Image (cartoon, rainbow, N blue to C red):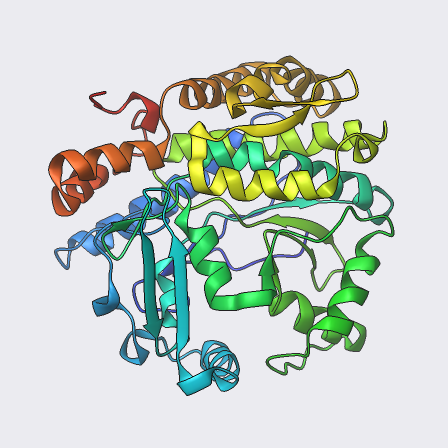
Length: 399
């Protein structure tokens, strides 16, 4: 894959830091190596932050963040984000973005925001899997199939502006801000990445203009850069095609992040195998899309619709679905892709324990109800600071 900047850099808001790790071949201890690389970056950042009496936190949405932390004064001086803000706000009535989210606790959160910077309260961990164009359709559809299962297990952002909303509130908030440009999808893909690119060319005018050297990449970069599906094909300057997975929030620990890398890659590759046997014909896309938003709302507690193997469907929790596929995921990653068996088994065990006990969203919901937002955030930072810290599903938690 093309080289990418691995140094930390600011993104939308002045408190958003982005870290990239160098791409690697999917083999051996690749998950552990990626985690170690990420850990080294975080250690350096934490040491620098400590000199100024502050901390680095890995959050999807920090539970104490609110409208005091949004507004143009928080935006970085990036011309890209300034142009995006101008374009997004241009067509809004009264120059405000109305946000309406129905909480799983029965209340409605409504607010009006004056600019794009509210998008900056959200942080994600994005994973890219490189794919050959000939394999794109089955890998993409397979990734979509398992995306709700993954999201249920790694949901981690239950609060926004001190209100409990969804298990993964990032999904609702991001789509409310970006409207039609942020979405899960509309159907199974049948014509490869060009099918998606052509649809976006037709549907979405460019927000901003850029001048890459490669003219044919210009249009693709414009469209993929201003359209935000939760799984997105990307083309890099060296013509590498990847799938970008966008629904996972940042944090809480390096161990959880590494385990979710394994889950994303493993389920996508397994889903690819299933799609080669016409699983797209076994479950309508609309059910998979509904599963995704059900998972975003309820996390580990979500009941997902899944084929029962008899021509019908059944409701299952994410852990029940995954229990049927752990062995297949492990065998495929170890035997077909050469990952180390001990690494695969360890990280899948982290996923299994979290799916059956509690994930980050559930822990934060409990901690904030029990301790209040500020002390819950202090505990979160304490438990997640050490790169060798235990997974979130083993943190202190009273039922």
